[in-house]
View 1 (cartoon, one colour):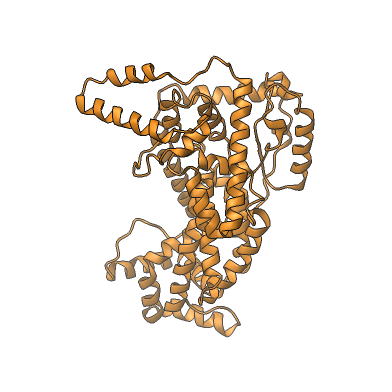
View 2: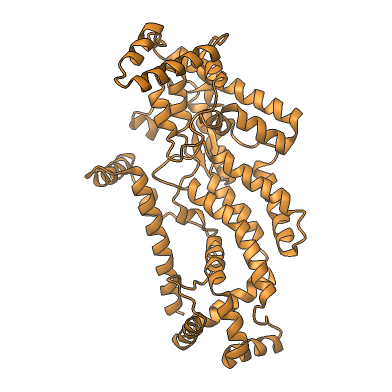
Length: 451
């Protein structure tokens, strides 16, 4: 087995998309690796569904039948993008209306649902231009009149733009969540449930909307959402544990969100299940790690406080230790102690979860090991560019037949090339996302000129 060749003696989770064949693969891995030294809780929670793929399926379900308003706006964009003369006329109207924008109109692509969102986002800025062209540009108005006479769509009116704006606002939730889930330079497992909770709340609200466009679209999305994430029991419990291990949320956020979605009674049962799993993980890590790992004594903690040169910092630190001692009364383990303390870092916009656990590893020596592994669980397998695609991905025979050694060499070489100069992960993440947006705009430009 290739894993053995690479020296891997345990698999915590395996992130795959929702192809039925993958379930067979997961079951096989669970059986053959059950007795490996690095196996955690007998691989019970190994199967991690590729979350960006599920979001993609839900969004794609809502776009299966494009509403007439969206179709009319799309046709108007195609008209402008179909020739340089029409594009120049459009720019002339922009100048007359005093609209300045560096954004370009972009066509949507049938195999990428995010292109519909990006098209509507740019069109919103030029709504007045399209409406003015309908009154003053004879070529534009006659084009759509001929379309109507032949049974096609007419030009978009004000109500069409209003519908598109409402739909775009809702679709933005999926767009932003997919980009987060598919990040390659940062982890997101602790933020997964927050994004899903917001989307689920929005879907539940819009199902009752008076807006026909949103109601019809969201109803289809809700059916798909329930198939993969409905009831709460279809989500790997490790993703709920990741929420608890975020010191800004802990168990309190799960209690709030579960009670909002499923009611207080069901919510309490689900919270107990998550807490039980966290205790199982903690107990397991205690059993397999060195028994020499101990919590620092009171004298050691006092020494840390005494090292402070600033008297204000020293008083603050002593007060924190006082609160910690009060909150920890009756706590027999790290989990109870962690959950008993107040949430931390909620107002810090630059809060780093892993940094917090690193700084508090002396207080939670074993629970920090659990956090390190759970928070690192990937919930996506490809970059956002591929995550948005609803077309098939084909692996050529050359790539699929690479030996384990060659794959390892390629991965290592890529990491070494990227690490030649020390990089800031936050800066790199922003740069990668900016480049993806630029490549998307360039792709649409080339697509237009190749029409």
